[in-house]
Image 1 (tube, rainbow, N blue to C red):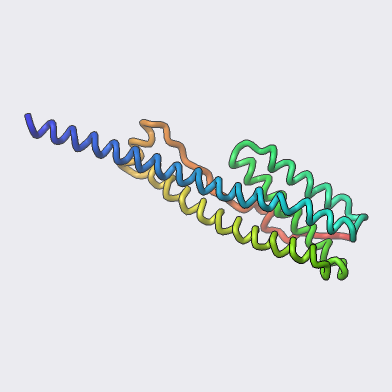
Image 2 (cartoon, helix red, strand yellow):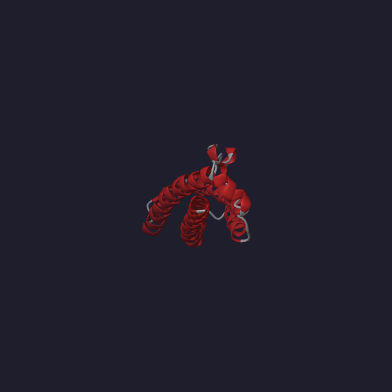
Length: 180
């Protein structure tokens, strides 16, 4: 009589521990995604100022400025992490073009405001990179728990789903091409 109670109690405790572990890991994934979002928000707050400074020197680069604005808008209207990742890739690519345009104007490259904004954006890009790495690490840990036995049994019982990894698209890997 005592042995079945001990076994059942042990199984219930193991179920509770696995469930709580999955909840903690899922929340860590969500938190790490939020940290990426915070850094991307900082990046988006810096971009309009940078664009305005570059506009003053390169009025004829209208298509680049419109592309930056469009990419920023696409990100802000994204609702899912996958959409946000795609929009972020677009913005990263178009920012490369913006900096390539800035390279063509020596007086702009010497402008203190431009240099300060470029430095802040560079720091923010580093923070985004680290946040992406951390997100992928915690997503991997969580996904392993969702897929590996015995936690996979608990995950399927309570409908835990895998989280996507933050991948770099082929367009982001390519060097931006600027044609004058």
